Amino acid sequence: MLNWHDGYYTDLAVYDTYTQEISPLLIDFNLTLAGYSTDKNNKIGAKKKFSYLELGFGRGTSLNAHAATSEGFFVGTDFNPKHALIAQEYGYKSKANMRIYDDSFLEIEKRLDELAHTYQIYRDSDSNNFSINTNATKFSHDNKHCKQDSNLKNTTICEELKFDYIVLHGVFSWVNKSNQEVLLRIIYKFLKVGGIVYNSYNCHPGWSPKTPARHIFSLYNQYTYGTPAEKITNCLDFFDDMLECEPMFAKLNPQNKKLIAELKQMALTQKEYIAHEYLNADWEVFYFSDMAKMMGNVKCDFLCTGKILEHFDDFHITEQGVVFLNGIPNHIMREQVKDYFTNKQFRMDLYARGATTIPIHQAREKILNTEFMLLRPIHEFDYKVNTARGEVNLMRERYDMIFEILMSENFHPKSMREIIESSQLHFTHALSAIVVLIQEEMVFIAQDLSEKILEQSRKYNTYLFEQQANIASSIYVIAPRIGRMIVVSETEQLFIQAYIEKFGYWITMHGNEIVECDSKTKSQENNIAVKNGNGVDSHIKKTQELESYLAQYVSTIFQSQGRKHVKDGKVIEGKEENEQEVIRLAHNFVTNKLVLYRALGIC
Image (tube, rainbow, N blue to C red; front, side, top):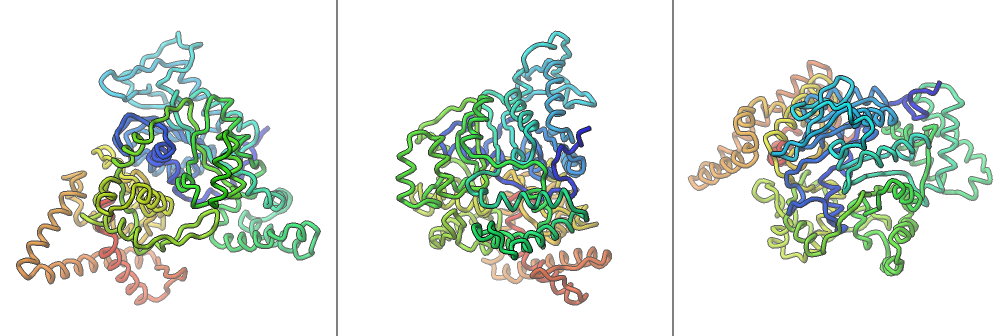
């Protein structure tokens, strides 16, 4: 009998991470940059209904974020029940319109087939929403517009059961041929006309030099004994010892010395990544052109990259190389040859079942109307970006102008049009800078909010913060204003919880207005006080009181549980030193992050 995991590595749970490239907002932005229509809205981030299927969601961090920060309908499956349990534990707290399963890909295909052949789905004539009948073994949602119809047994799949987005992040290379075929069938049967597929996978030529090493690691995992963590350490030592014996392979492939050094360093903190990347029984590396052909067989055409900085070739390829590539008429061949210029080893592709191109001026107008926000304090940016050609130093003056604009008005969202008008930058220069900042996760697309989105996000974060108060939990917090997660340390999450507990009635009473109205009121009060000559002292006193309150709140939790702070990678042992550290962190939080987090809708 075949194991339930079908050869996929399950001894260690997948590492917790958020992937911005599968955000519907960023997918739409990538498509607009490439000149494709995504919807009829005049900007990216406007409210819209959509359906979204994620196949192989890992711990479900990204799936939960995107479901909670939208009014769409989400379905996700990961056949590892440990992953599904984690995703359900957090995801269902948000009450978002989503279903999470531990189905295999074959099982989710059958589940979708059964729904399509058993139930008639009716659209609500007054809205774009659709509903799915309640059934314990199937999708469940409001059944107001659902009707059982036995005559549907042999009909084609109704359009309402298909998806606008189907995403597979880091899945296709790590499953066997049989599962690859199932994934392609799901795309063929359940992607809407005009729907988008995101598919990321390991690729040549970048992986070619490392493939022999990976094969040895996988064999070591199969034929030796030990705990999962021990196997990872031991297989790296084994391969290193082999290289020290100077086999001909090592002489002809000296880059393996560098590889093993990098992996040993990574193993100190990211054993889970090494396990899932290198120890799987099934593992396949593709050429882009072969993947494009497979996707073409299920009626999906390649549109563009899902990695935003790759829209700008001059960051990655020499001027001579760009001219050479532009001379290749076929876009599939051009894209494949580009991988040789960048030595690509991991691709993020966007495909569509039918796509409409839009004129350059229309795409430009949509981008000009799109709003952006900072998601981190600017002191965390080093004015550098890594590209295929190496590290690039950026023009500090240009980026400082954009930072100043984005920080103004308490970090309120700014459209590209506002950024250009305020900075006097050329459209191309402003756009390339914003793209770099999105790539570096300093800036992201802002979206229109609703009470539903705010409520879903608040419920998710509340549960996360409650968990964090008992045991160190996820570092990813939902920021509803930008429809994604951001990294927030466990200590800062507790600061946020303390802040919400003290001032939470503002959020409950005013919903979205907490971000805009209260910050404006505070600003006006401070301006009046400053004019009267006593505002500065009053403001400083209130700030100090808040910092003291937050520090005491967190210290009480940490001391009662024996938890300690970590600074520069080292655990702080002494009680007094821990108290000093939490005071420092509270000051940094209030000074540099609180206003930003409020603007993002977190607190």
